[in-house]
Image 1: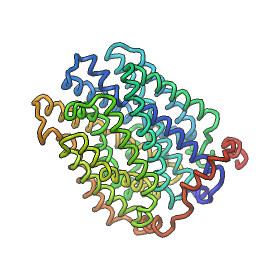
Image 2: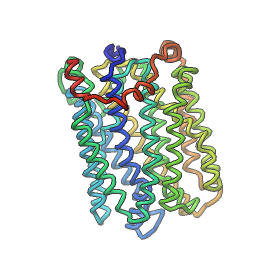
Image 3: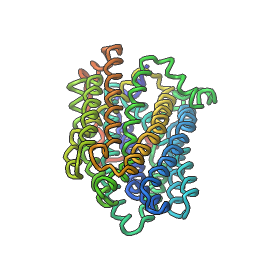
Image 4: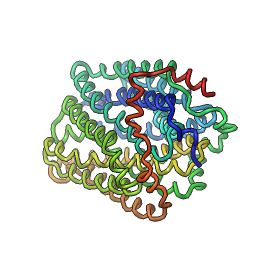
Length: 449
């Protein structure tokens, strides 16, 4: 059940990938700017108590994920009914309002309300994944999702470093920069982002039974091949929560790092991520196929998190990054494998269901990792168990590896063979080909219609 229209390369399709890439990049930049400073902002509200800040950060993270769990399926169903573009634009405005509140408020409750708004409107990532499925042929989706990984990589190279330096000037300055980013992103999308889902491929109606989070998860029953892969993605998301929920406070506790060093470290993470997802994934998937690439990435993640936990100093932590970065192969491979099974009219619901599972995993992770750090820091343990949060992440990725190994044996062989034997045109070259000759995507879309 594939979108045949996506199988033929066109200038409009190539341009659309550029535009969605830039949209995600700006979103990541706005998020990345505040990563080094938000925990420190909370820390200032609670009298520099690391344990109390970890518990407050837990509440912030759980609330954000809970709002995502409830509202992302609604946005996914709306995206299937009305198109991807309006959902992405609404998300940009919502994030801008969230960051504006964070820049202005002087109390934790108001800061909390800002995170509620952000969680409700944070649909750009799932809508963008559906967008890519709309405009990309099946055999190139793993590489296309890898290209979106470059947006994450570039964003986390630039933004945390800038955010760290801006945070040294004033703790609210990164939030104002994020507001500007979101408004710029909204204006950019309003004028140049085309709609990827033509009216004839949209759902005939909006159904609340499908839009609620549990109704969206029922979609997976109709695609049993996807169910296990969603479980792998959920465990991936759970392990990944070790970064946003605890890394800043963990680095402060174990290595004595402030915003500047955290920003530099996250920048290095972004560099390695961009190298893996923007370059190496093309060769890894072509060589191994999506199935074995998934297993390879999860194995690297298990080893990488274990090495992170054992790192006695910040410099050792940096040295482990190349191994851990190869974990980034897993998510695009799993994402691409899932899209092979789902009807184009339901890609939005699929991405909504995946995001709901990831949000549930995020809620669990928001409890697991900060509470683990709070317990370790309250005991003043700076030895081996100081890395308990990363040990926990390693165990979770190891479990996802076992699950992926089990379910991969029951997936059709064509899923991995198609990507390995039919590489198709290089999507990196397609994107590069239009950067010097961009046409109006709206005009091109209207011409084709």
